[in-house]
Image 1: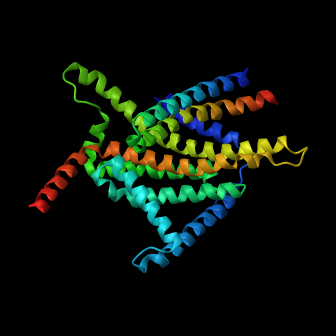
Image 2: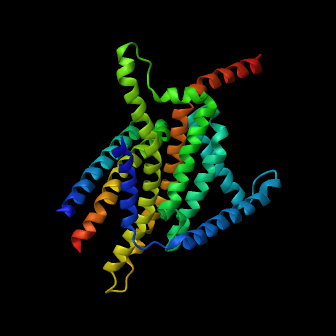
Length: 69
Length: 257
């Protein structure tokens, strides 16, 4: 069951990362002169979303290992 | 409140349990010396080209580009007074970047070690608090945590809650900074090992095909750590920015006159 939980967490984070990339690329295509500012805020948002999965992994990972064994 | 603080501790404990094979402090020290040696070699090579009028030396021009990049980031995020934070930010950048480069070629690296990352994140957090106190004063800095000024019963009700939440979020910054770097670098190692396991039958190291992504991670992680430190600095030294802007405007007016 925990494996499915990690998969769901990865799915949600992947959707979030995709949305950020989608929005940032659309903004960059519409306004190429704002690429610098958009990249900076995009990276910050990516970092925050990525952290969610890392926390899930660190909290869920050890439990997962005990179940697999 | 105790639960909130112990949540961070259990997160660290779980992250430590994730990596059972700890290389020990001798390995961290060895790889840290390696990283520092690389940094000083590169800086020494860059220093030789400083005397020329035009920077023709390879390392000198690279470091000039790096300096301009970091300075642009600091000034762009923090504001006009961001130039004085460049030494700290560039030190973080060099340490994380060279640590990640070492992590590409060696089984271990300082940035793949949670304790080293936690140390760097704690330094970053305390530096941000120190700069906040220096630019706003101790009372102004802690008053900054209390949120907007409210009147009457709202002040008694909401301001303590906002204050507690702000303090906890300040304390959680080091958790997020260190776990992000550790998770990316250590997770990269884990992913390479797992993919190598796939190819053992055919004697093909599939993990090598992750190298382009890891190359990207090297730069992006160094950038994100420094970028977030810049953002925290800009949040904390926000009030003095206006004064600085006015001061500069006055300077420009004087210069124009």
